[in-house]
Length: 291
Image 1 (spheres, helix red, strand yellow):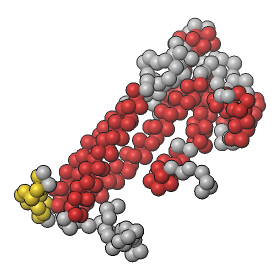
Image 2: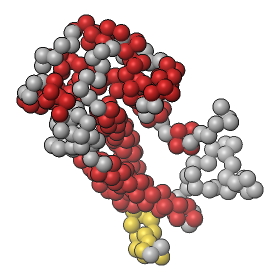
Image 3: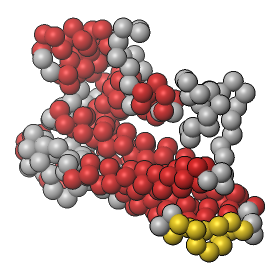
Image 4: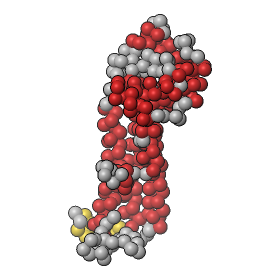
């Protein structure tokens, strides 16, 4: 294992929950959940899919043969079709109806949106913990006077609690942005190869009302309010920018707080804990380098 590149994002900084969420296991299981949701909707709306086939898919959702999928992908040069075949081998009774009428982005893009929203929920939980801890700290030191600075020059007195409240305010703004991003996220739905739903118009004999119902059913299965009003094959990539912007808010709030602490440490106004056995520098182990 030490001969393979390992990202510090997973080995040092990511939570176990986040690592598991973005694992291949969770991603492909989400693809399978999407295939089951599609099959259920198509069955209910009159397409020739049986309850036995749906049960076969449900009974085999957890068993993912990644080695077999790799072999299929070598042959087919297509990741989604490799997993369609692998799932079909696990549930042969349903092999013929997996992915019926859909394009690859039905699973890849919808799964990404599902995982992004779950990741934002995890971050929301962490932000709440940060705000709770800062609130307790601000209240405890609400009346403790300390020297305030402007332009990093000594100015007037403030309180330690006031300083913490400034950090909190940044995190509150970041929290509100994250929640707005999360709550306004839509699902791509099942829209066909170019977003025209042409394959489903054919499957449902021109009944576009059934297509709308199918998309609503898939949304409900995953807890989304709606799909995008119009799309191509993929979800609008501007959504990636919106998510990154919400994460940037959090990073900026964290940076402001961390930079303040770093500067205050230099002036010996505040110190981080220094554990027994901790080393601050390879050459100067007594140093209290900011963590």
